[in-house]
Image 1 (cartoon, helix red, strand yellow):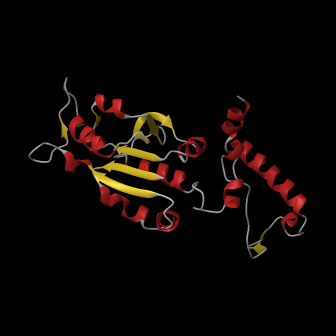
Image 2 (spheres, rainbow, N blue to C red; image 1 turned 90 degrees about the vertical axis):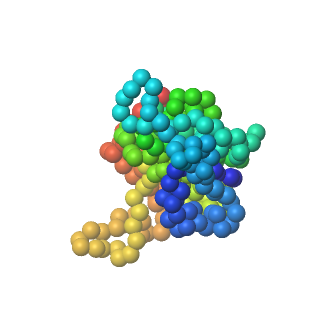
Image 3 (spheres, rainbow, N blue to C red; image 1 turned 60 degrees about the horizontal axis):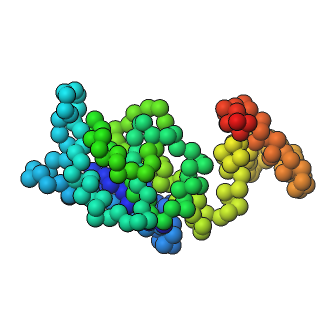
Amino acid sequence: MKIDILTLFPNMFTGFLNESIIKRAIDKKLVEVNLYNFRDYTDDLHGHVDDTPYGGGAGMVLRCQPIFDCLDKIRTPDSFVIMLTPEGKIFNQKMAYELKDKKHLIFICGHYEGFDERIKSLCDMFISIGDFVVTGGELPCMLVSDAIIRLLDGAITKKSLENESFNDNLLDYPTYTKPRIFRGMEVPSVLINGDHKKIEEFRNSERLKKTKELRPDLLEDKND
């Protein structure tokens, strides 16, 4: 997979691309990630990528030209362009699985007051990470990219993915490690007895119980 990211703040991605599972996936050549500062593509002599909105109003609006020109350079027939925007569809695990099969993802990270509406004509999908506003699209891009990259074959073990939260619209089961008793809190005995059938039954039961208590909306979605 190839991921290209259009951003005004490429340095924000330094830690993200150089730590943990993401770095290992890059080192193993499971994914190629490129950062494009679309300020480098502006035709403005002073390097501006934004301007005041027609009709008045607060803030500055990202101009079409730098982003269109950047996309002209990097877009291919395999590209799937995603804009990170509050008006997008709320991202979830199902979307992560769908996007992991794309050959080339291009993310456009916004900033300031927003995008010139015409930039949206470039996009195949619009994604939001929730009903709140952050400073720019960089953090949402990292979250979405992380969720996708970790699903690529070889990024982590398939066993680790099988019972993760949100698979089958259920949260993950509770896990424990040594010591068996810590400050009066004891590991459930079913996990100690070595009966794998009962352990599996316990874990499935706990997934359902946990989801009912903490995220009943997931069960409603499952029944739709």
